[in-house]
Image (cartoon, rainbow over the protein chains, first blue to last red):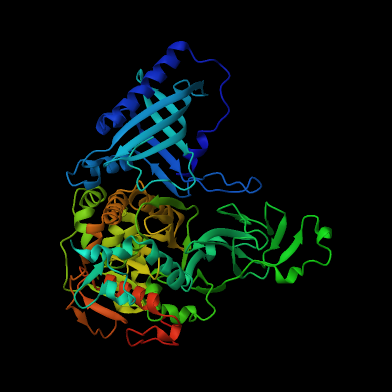
Length: 182
Length: 445
């Protein structure tokens, strides 16, 4: 489990990605956001590789002289493989998931998309910023911002998400639940 | 018109909690006046969880946390002792530490540069020569709390009159040993904290963990099915399951040894605990080895909770009567293989964190429990806590106040009785002992 997180932060390949690739990546991320808002989670799962690592570590407020990089062994909101994500999704399909009925309303906004080539010809490093607005129950509002660092992989001509690291801009997580994927 | 909406607050806090009839007055979950009394009479006098030894193992390692709404720093000093100080400068009151954790030789206030050592003493002041003769530094250190530990858990208390930690825990140590001492080497906390806000009264978290086994089967049906391959919680077994409490600390439990561990969804962790079970029997005896790992949940007065075997440990820090900060850690046995520790880490985060398959349904309930009380008519009502009131037993092995059947309101009522006992009392002599202690002055293992 320890190795996967390290892979993400390698030196970029200096070669420029094609406009076509950039376009494909953007379309991939927008589609993903749309499926999230529609809560079409099974469709979203088809956009992931079998070896997905989906990771959102918790934050700790530290002095600059005393930094602590999140490590895979630390507490995390998500530290999931494919089966773990499927477990979470299975909960929403039981018919007894009370806190999701009535359903949460959400808007996933993706921006600041940057595409980099990597040493692997089939894998691309993609940075993006995600903003998720949630509206729950009568009038509750929660907004989350996440800095994402992804590895997208070309699998038989189709892009899939293979790694995602999300760093959110909150120290104390400001709401009672995290019922969205960023 | 029913004038009870304007009824005065009772002077006796036992009038809010009826243990005979089994109800609780809704106002204790809403009113600012009651909350202020809680800060004075409960939080300012209780032993509070600061850290586990493993979180601040080296000299200068520190964490910041809260005792009630009082911010504190817990730091390991040069002599290896944990010291706990108010996180507030005695000059103008600013915080002297703004980090959640770290390592530091001193804590310096940002305002005028007053610097305090690991022993809390005022070491120096920026441009100190200006104070020539105006200050005796020895008189102006950070205010220090009493510190005491139980099997690696570090507690602090600002009340010099409060009983020693061992007496505060009392017979509850018999229970706590199952969590902290079920294997040679004891426990450790894994790195990292999950902190989150819940817009609910702090007591709803505590009472849920202290005794509310019943909610799991309904609230967490979806989470249980997700974690356990489509299977719901096993049917309620009242025959060999219990509520046990001592001094307001409680533990509700079954006796099959694995149901809580199973919720992690990690079969290897069950296998690990089964492999150490024979040694656990030698350490803790047949009864406790049978309890540990069963469907169970527990809280320590006033605001610490955990799920033994599953590995989530948390505090519910009050942020006013209608909001709390939840801090969550994962605990494991120190001598477990790393792989087992990481499987537990993964399992606790997947179940009992803000995004967890079980936790998500809890926070939603507790906010509802709290926020409905904004209605004055709503607030006039009382809440039913009468399940299992006639189930009290004497058990030859289980100490404290014991009730038969883990689907029960007994521990919740014992918690609220302790709450009322402290809210009423001006001195520790006024606080009644609610059961005959079996282990007074004696170790529980």
